[in-house]
Amino acid sequence: MKAYSSARDEYAGKAMIQLDANENPFAGEFARYPDPYQNELKAKIAEAKGMSANKIVLGNGSDELIDLVFRAFCIPGKDNVIGMSPSYGMYKVCAELNDVEYREVLLNSDFQLDLTSMMNAIDENTKVIFLCTPNNPSGNVLDIEDVGRLLREFNGIVVMDEAYIDFSTNPSYINTLDENPQIIVLQTLSKFYGLAGLRLGIAYCSEELVAVFNKIKPPYNVNEASQKLAIKNLATIDFSNYKRSFFELKEMLLEALQGSSEVVKVFPSEANFFLVKFKDAHFIYNYLIENGVVVRNRSNQPLCDNCLRITVGNKDEITALINVFDRYEKSIIYR
Ligand SMILES: *Cc1c(COP(=O)(O)O)cnc(C)c1O
Image 1 (tube, rainbow, N blue to C red):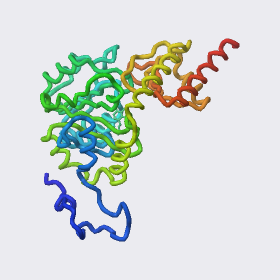
Image 2: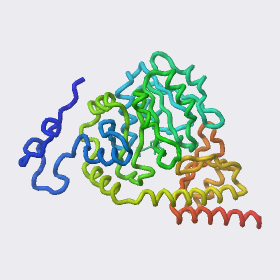
Image 3: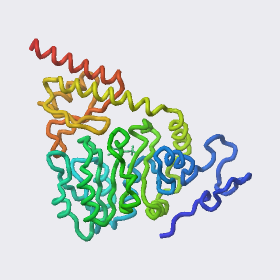
Image 4: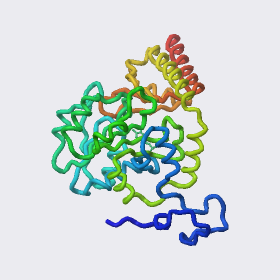
């Protein structure tokens, strides 16, 4: 297909008089169409991550980028993709929306890849494999050796969703793009960078794949307000300070959970949440709601029987959660 050529595509310079895009010149800050390639923001992200800006695509959240992967690589009604289970729900939603078969392969009991089942699920119409590491909702990082073997055996696109990588002590796959041009790494400003409301997702991939995304994405997919506010926030927030207090709060939440008589197991996490197995997750979920705390009930997900997913919030939020658990422990003593 031929891409839409926007006014900003045909003339990207800084003309004094812009009469090419039918804008309203009497309006203020947001009168003009935004940069379709978000070059200023990409340069900031590239600098922060030690990457080349030419290997970055930005989306209206990584959710938009997930959808673009289907549009770019899959023929509706014919191709299929493979995803791990349990994992993030949007891959399947986008697959169904695009009329692409979604093959779910169950993880093993340690939430690691079952490579044999994964290989068996691949056929000649498999175009994409979605991996999520650290995985949502389990919180663990996928074994590097397993991922390496999968990359060697499958020569289609492998999406690595790293929405939580900035909370992890493990390295990102963005450093391996040169050796593995089949990889698309997804990251986001929604989690660690605290800008979920701006809707900014990042894809890192080869320049060849960047060209594919640029061709099919909506021309002005990231609005001007989001671009400006992201640049401002990335420059002004002290992320290393946040990271330090994050690890303290994570430890505080972990200790509280492990001290609760209702908790069966807290799964190890490389993300900003814990998957927690309770004796009766449904009961605890409702008890927390009654006390003004909402967590995510993952009990109906495969391998997540009686599990709730709890975010590492700020100090006030975690203290509130701990108080609710304390009150519960006291109440059972008197029961
Ligand atoms: C939260 C989340 C996203 C969504 O990111 P947005 O950039 O806000 O769309 C993507 N993948 C996973 C695994 C997530 O948990």
